[in-house]
Image (cartoon, rainbow, N blue to C red; front, side, top):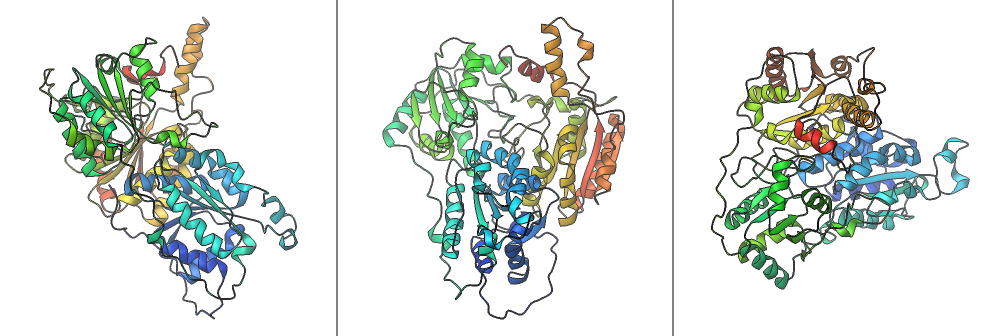
Length: 595
């Protein structure tokens, strides 16, 4: 769902300054950022972009775009990433020279793998060695700074004039927002920023440099796909990387109902289909559960809507045998692959390839398919496991049940969920009910991305909720200061099992394979002796915080207070101490024989 308005956040208001009429290069760059209608720039300050920093403050008045300060460059990119997952339009993150780019590189990789546009701005130099200060300007200048991230961005530039800088910004937005979307990087020479111009340059009209409209598959390929689906005995739709657009959501439901096609979804990406719909065939997860494998293996025609890891998913279902289903792939993702990263996954077999984003293809297929009679008995929508009566010590399912009860009928956006969350714990009924994960599969991105998503949700009727693991929280905890400083309301619930538990399972598997003591799996994994006080970390940065909470009854009362505080504009953290463990479905996927 593309945001049409921007909610305000707390702004530092500069003392008004009178212009002496001198046209500075960085002023013209700032003017271009405003013309691109970028509402916020995320930054941790640095001398390499001091000229641009001054221009945003004193030339633009710190608005349109407004600075939002972060305590680490990785959070700058992560917040921009999380914002765009909701709003559908990019923010800018400014990273200081080579060292800031190194800090931000993990978050850039996340955005790359997640196919999310972020405009990363950097600075270096001065490139002219004669203008460098001793020591510091030398170690903060690189011959080819973009080389640090070029393998996982779509495009980069280091313009040498203001006209080139204007064009670079226009091109950066155009490339970043053209499917498959992704991050771009524009680096400004410090000396260029601080140079006087002979005259203020004319500013190009950004409306003339937009991304192209979505690609449309060829008519004959649409007809082939529609014929296969209309004549299928048991079609299955894999609803993968799609937009948050409500029209696209309704069109996917229309197509599934017309074809009486079973639908599978994936917890690694944002929700793509209502999980309580009778055609939703199995709870989503990171890997296929037994029901999903059976459904997919029984399909004679599979429609992949930019499914993440189509080859690996087919391999899970067919277990090494040749895939007997006819495969229709809808994607433009192959345009992102450059050979350095293996995020393209395996190469899937495809019988009909629709070169477009899912929304365009689904719209055209809806016009071409012939409705199919129901060939399978309709399932009753299963009640989520979270509706079980919660009581006693906290586990992730109990936490989900308590959270569900505390939220009640309020519209909610689950901005993040931990790896231990199972798809049967919660129903998604709207494209903003769940936003998916970070793309890169590391940890530490959760706090920043949640803050960015909450920023985009500010002013809407949705409660922004992030449920994250304690390892993710600890690596990104100082992102929380930005939520307090900018007054971004949100609720963050930490599933605190005092462990990097994912790797406990890996160590258990190694021990079993090698006939060694399973009891040692915790060593080198536990976050204990001492156990960090997660709530105090939040309170120390100006947030409202509760915990640790260890049982269901206490958690429900705490969550009701926390939700009320978030509704009243606070950023809130709840430390919920859960027992270590994953759902059986999740554990089966993580310990499969081919991982």
